[in-house]
Amino acid sequence: MKNNNFPSLNALRVFEAVSRLGSFKSAAAELAVTQSAISRQITALEEQLGIRLIQRDNRVHALTPAGDALAPELSRVFRQIERLVKRTMKNGEHARRTLTLGISSELLRWWLGPVLDEFNQLYPHLELHCVQVPEYLSRQNEGALSHELLHGELDALLTFSAPAQKAISNWKLTDTKLILVRPESLPVPTEDTLPNYKYVAVNTNKDWDRWVREHDTKVPAEHIQLVNNTSMAVELAQYTDRLMLLPDCYQRAATQSGLIHVEGFDLSGRQGLHLSVRRESQKEMAIVALVNWMRHVADIQKK
Image (spheres, rainbow, N blue to C red):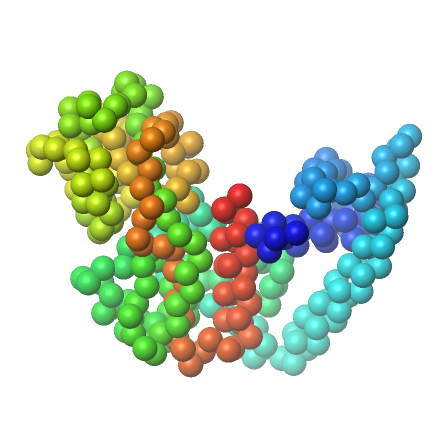
């Protein structure tokens, strides 16, 4: 199994509870979720692993040989994690930690927000405090954002592109692909008709000019409206019948706004999504936990 196919910790936790308690009902009660949620997690885990873990015959939930081999090891690991967390918390309030993350409203709404509950469950002693920052790092804002990182105003920064300061460590979480999207009211464009459309583009996304050159598109300047962020671009595309380039990690935005992917006009972006922290703090346990979890989120989002 490849690393980017590693099952979610929630699904493994659900299977451990079912195997230990002997029923979906008891596991649902312990984890404070519905039985249908338990069933979905188990099914998703079995599909991802490619093996059956639980036999479901006549309402009897017996472990298969594969499930029987996995269950005790999972129980041991989760008990070890539980003991570690309890021991850490007993060390006093200094063990509790608030991490301040600089993140744009777009990345929070369409990328990170839907999975924040998993972070809270895995690290109950860590509190993630989100602060609004621009989604794209640029020459205009890099100095200010680097200053906030280096002076402890931010513990971590999530942006497209990364600071170049030597005192800052960066992790590229994912590459970015730009997709062309259109509102449902517009006809599907072709290479020949691209110049006839109106566009909206984020002015700090450096890939717009590359996309125009890639498709040899002579779009008149008056047909292009530049805005400061993706949220405004999505709304203008939706309400003023414009095409736009959208990072593929924002697929949720397209779905929610009724924007349709136009096949054949994708472009590999040069501004990957990066997580940045102070180099001096990168080995702190709370920072290590955040970095590893963010990389896990990026792997999940790629699927």
